Every structure is written in structure tokens, then in C-alpha cells.
Amino acid sequence: MAEALARISQIDDLGMIQIRADLGRAGDAIAEAAGLALPGQGRVTTDGSRILGWMSPDELLLVLPRAEAAQALAALQDALSTEHALVLDVSDMRAAFRIQGDKALHVLMKLCPADLASMPQDGLRRTRAAQAACGIWREPGGYVLIGFRSVADYLRGLLQGAALPGSQLDPR
Image (cartoon, rainbow, N blue to C red; front, side):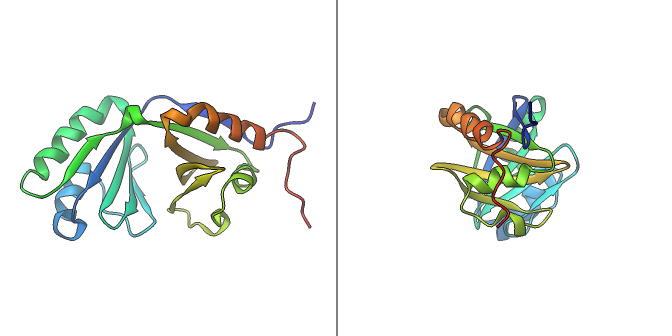
């Protein structure tokens, strides 16, 4: 039997905290509370276990081990208590998938209209997988795709279908 183009697995132990604030005003406080430098536009910063991703001009997403989410949420809320800001644990609203292997990019290219091939190593891209809103960033050996938990089964099916043996893109 032919081998799949990529290994698809759901990640169940991630915590995710959405941060909405004036990043110019509150950036230093966010960076200190999150323990990571603020990322540039369309980028992520990481320490290996935590990722801080730029989602829009006033929005960041902190991705970390789920066991650390409550403490990080409290630290961010405290750091931003004097700012007009929203800090929200969205862990239960999101589903995350690993797409690993040499052809991981090909799997995503079949589903996403974005030019993921030109995404920098520390890039984060908001796009769609088929018709489902998602965010994608690189990790060693592949990518992570996040989307709404309400469409997790749909996303899993899309990814698994795009990774089927023999479904590689036509090289022409």
C-alpha cells in the first residue's frame, strides 16, 4: 500500500488565549506577561513550548500547553487591567491539527488559497481550508492548522483526504 503524503493528527493538549488590545500601547505588558517577544505582522515568536502569533493589528493568539493556560490567562488579565483589552481563553473553541512529513505543504496547498510556500519559517497565516476559517504556522517537520472546534470533523476529513496516497499535486 502506498504511503500517505503526510501524517495528520489532532492535538488535544493545547491552550489558546486570544488577546485583543492596542498592541502599540500594551505590547510591552503583553510580552512580559506572555513571556515572549511580540511578533511582527504575520509572524510568530516562540520559546519552544509557547507560541505568540500575530492575528491582526489588534489581536494576538498565545498557544501554550493547556496546563499553563489558566495561569497565563490570569497574568495577561492582570497585566492589561488598566488597558482597554480583551483576554479570553479560547482553548475549548478551537481544534488543532499537525500536518507532518515531506509533503505536508502539498496537503495544505490543495485546501488553502494562500501562498503557503512563501510563508516564512516564523510565519502565521490566516486563511481557509476549503471553506473553513483557519490559521496555519510552521513547526519542525510540518505545520499546525487551527480552526473552530465546531468544524473539527470537517477539517480532519479534509486533511486526511488531501493526504491520501496517490493524491499528490500534478508537477506540471
